[in-house]
Length: 456
Ligand code: GLN
Image (cartoon, rainbow, N blue to C red; front, top):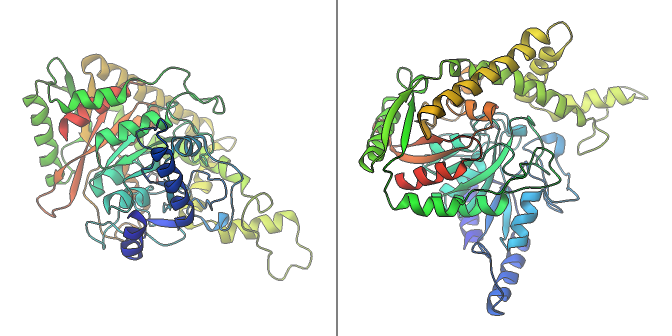
């Protein structure tokens, strides 16, 4: 049914870069056999899933939305993909994304943009717009995304889906093509909070192949989502972050946010306002740390090891450096080049302390703001994104206004804390979905599921 749905609508939505109909049907048939043989089944056995094209999949193309990886077939599975397969989830295919996960609109994909199923002239968010659009358009019931600065939560908000960024270290990054190692997390993209909890429990937990993987048991996420759905939040303290609301935020987004907070109060939660003064510097901090890490990570695309190799024109016997230059020039898009230049500059000798070093200090201050806020409240709230989905092309030539979409989501990545985006309703001015973000202290992912499910 999902393959039929993809055939019917993906020409217009373009959520997928690669559909593996044959593989998915074979996995579905194997699941049917297990079921008729009466074998013990994982709850999600046989439930199809779409995977963001930044996670490596054995035998299936993995492009990261870039020309530089066109035609590359990875020889192994990311840990999260191996866990999906072991539990029997058929993999429908790989979803579209901004090139190397850099962007907030999926317009930076080298393979053309994804369209928002709510309005095909609008963006589905990014970088994981493909995964969010696949779930929103009923092409897939579940998807995996990655969130480095908001790429699961912001697409969730603008497509009316649920997206979770787990605690840093909570889900393995082995086999995730790194954008920024200290910020990246893999997480669920679904239509309900309970679905996200089931998927999170499946992909999460310790992995010896990822040195940053937390060697602690996951909290009971499914139990927390079920408890939250009961609608009793008495004793819970929720903090509204003063710096992430107000002027400059779309009125309809703010209206749905305020209503959601009132709903929580109706269920017995106590609301306090908290202040996180350094959050206003989070965007600037992120756009130094992220390009620094990304420029270093992308050095491996050297025309020798993976994917594309371009020989420079008019050079009789090109050197390795000539080939590398020609390949990177042709293979990387503008946004990727912009960040390589920014990151290389921020890391260069003489500037390192002034930019990268300073950003790391501000990062510590942001974490202290979180600590102070979590001393006053069990979870923190804000709208997920400042606006609903904007029109395709609207911000493409203005990188700074594109970056501003992640104002509310970035602090969680800088500090490693978990967050969920849950639909909060439709904004009055355009009838498009808005999202509320719920943040919790590191390793307390269960809290975001409890409060998220209460709002559903
Ligand atoms: N939009 C942000 C960026 O461009 C977030 C990306 C992400 O989370 N992968 O960096």
